[in-house]
Length: 123
Image (tube, rainbow, N blue to C red; front, side, top):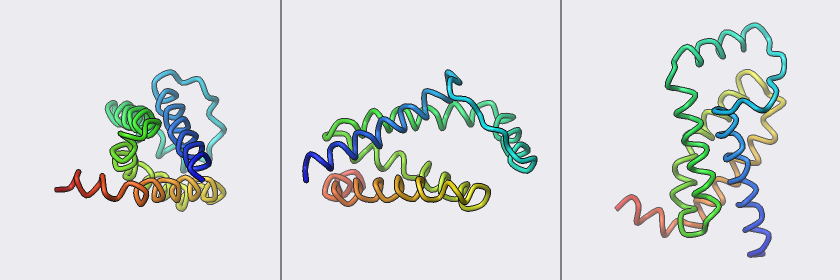
């Protein structure tokens, strides 16, 4: 079970490293978007600091999640981004809820698995 958990957590971390790097390097193709989603995308990119900030948080959190000693901090850092991803998918892309829901559950799993470390972060 420990090996499975490690593999799942590493894949989770690598996914966010990939997502964070893409916000800076733009190497993944952007699919065509409906007009409503294009307006939201334009609003997000008009805030010059928003996309780099989210990309940095995704990248740093992904790297922290790769290592067991820093996994709790990475999971806490990525949690607000996961909430945003879930809300975005629920509102605009319901077909993405399955994969984002799975990743959200993995994030919860990491948080529960490291609850003792998180208690020390809070105190």
